[in-house]
Amino acid sequence: MNSRVRALIVTILIVWAILLTVASLSSHNPLRESIAAPANSRHITVRRKHRLAHWMAFGVLSFLLAVLCRNPSRQLMALACVVALGALIEGLQHLMYENPFETWDLRDDTYGALSGFFAALLLLAITRRQSNQSLR
Image (cartoon, rainbow, N blue to C red; front, side, top):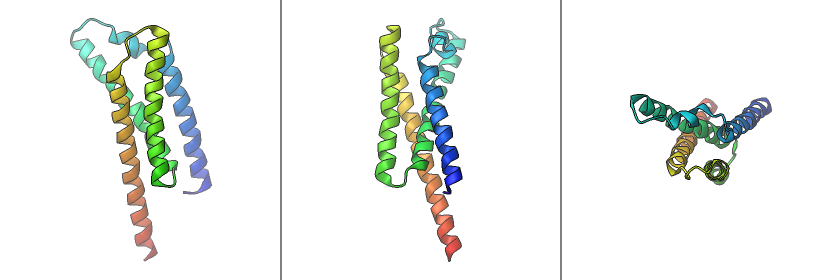
């Protein structure tokens, strides 16, 4: 990966992590407010969107970090850090808004982080294989 691409990924990663953290801790988060809606079909649809938002947010973060890491141990450390960030955000939401600790959100954060991690590993494996074949 050349230095320009790497710098672009780092910039996207930093912006993404800041937006994720600020949006998660914002008191005006529309997804959080709509979760408190009455249990009906709209609530179920909103809940699915909420879960998808967790998967995507942490999946993208994990993907970007895993792509940047240069060896497997750093990739695993990056995955652990993304999951820890999810736990930290959920803990802060619990303390700030006096909500119950949302283990189901942490579960979705973790699933998203794992999905992004494995997607990055797959991409890196395909890229390496193609570069090895082009050398032959």
